[in-house]
Image: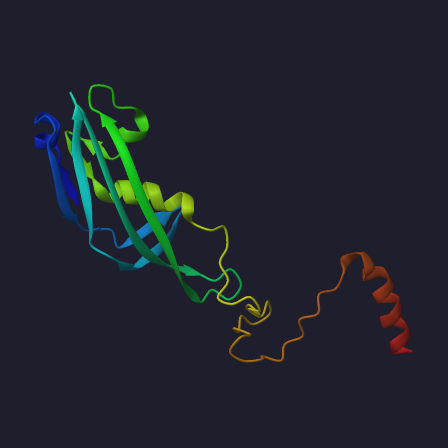
Amino acid sequence: MKIQLSKIISVPKYEETVEASIDLNEIKLKGVSYPIREKNDFSIVFRNIGKDKISFAFETEVTLGIPCSRCLEEVSYPVSVQVTKELDFSDLDEEDSSYIEDKYLDLDILIFDEVVPKLPSRVLCKEDCKGLCPVCGTNLNEKECGCDRTVADPRMAAIQDIFKNFKEV
């Protein structure tokens, strides 16, 4: 959603509350797409705080679908977004110019910029998630596959070969 800021910038001491929504349906990061499962409408309060200066503030929450780090089942992950910004249009810095273009506020880019740093490095569907079988790929939380999943220590390979030779005799 893009919001026109011209009136807010040009009228001294102007204040306006705008009902807003997020148009984004997913967050794409490093080739991975996280679908937005829930998003709420919210209000943004804009204020003119001086010549070519405005401030705005809002709070919202989005719920992302993030795969479990062990079993890859989707986990609902809520992210709270709280933004309070002051912008000086006579001197916009690089950070602000990513979501401000021609006196329009691109809300989707701003939300993206706020959500990405809050993404966890890993998410588990439950603390005792068993993950996937490394042999056949079965989700071990749902059923046991019966595969031999013992991982041999490569440092012990020579000793294991000796034991195998004695078993054959």
